[in-house]
Amino acid sequence: MREILGVKMYNVKEVTEILGVTTQTVRLYIKQRKLKAVRIGKPYFISEDAIKFYITGGLNTPDSPEKKEETDSKQSVPSKHKNKISTKTALLP
Image (cartoon, rainbow, N blue to C red; front, top):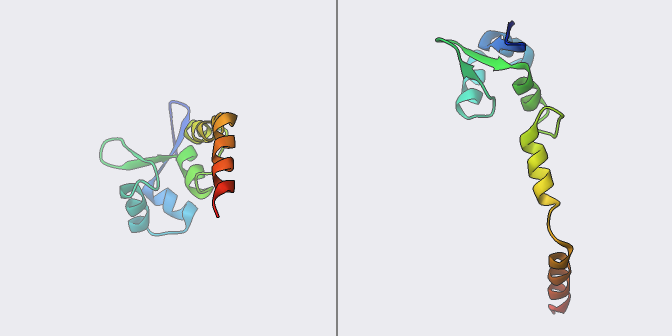
């Protein structure tokens, strides 16, 4: 584990030990963008937050603003539209 600019970063081998998978699997997760990683020189590094995000399945955490924006946008449907949808549904046989 290295700390770069105050962020804990792990190499692929360290992540394999944390997740209990092979190095091939970690590299596949990176390629499939299931696990966010950055390349510094030749090796990949994965932040502690990226590991937590992967482990929790992307659940809303305090450090994940993307998920917060996504849930905020779902709640922003005006109530007048909800009423129209429910009345149309009620009229169907």
